[in-house]
Amino acid sequence: MNRYITYLLMGAPGSGKGTQGKVLGAVPRFFHCACGDVFRSLELRTPLGQKFVEYSSKGTLVPDDLTVELWRTKIEAQVLEAEFKPDIDALVLDGIPRNVNQAKLMENLIDVRRVFHLSCPNREELIRRLQKRAIKDNRLDDANEEVIRKRLATYEAETKPVLNFYSGLVTVVDALQPPVKVLQDIVEVIWSTRDGVIAFNA
Image (cartoon, rainbow, N blue to C red; front, side, top):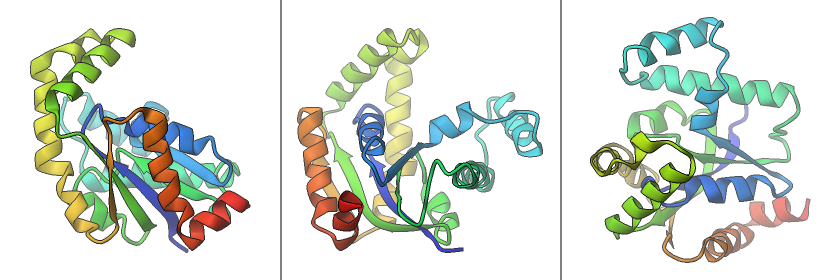
């Protein structure tokens, strides 16, 4: 199987990965897949779904190999349904790979062309954004500052090292800019590559 041409969106919780992913996914020849959506749309009666329930019902982390397998199954289903056409579409991912081990497990599945690090060193701003989003979405547990700080610490310890794994492919984007400027910075980098020109012109 040919690897999927892929752009990764990375950044701490609240940095705007999901927002940018959705906008890029609305552009023809780009297909956005958020790891959270994969879990939310999971068919729980399937063997893979049952494995997921086995871990999630105990409140334990889903193992990396199962996470990648769930993601791969979802993507292959979207190829079969012609929602994602890998011969002409570029994949835009956020939320996966979540750690270096997942990045290694996905090496034979994705051909990463560029990693966009939505950087926001101002942790207080991230906390403000996450609390605002939690209240808007009526997820009040997520508005708890202690919970948010734990999520940020987990990101620093587990996910941020993925940037080093893709060393040489990382573009840092200031996530504190207005969302439209963040998008502009991302698009300009994709446009400057041969693959990007083909994608935008297709």
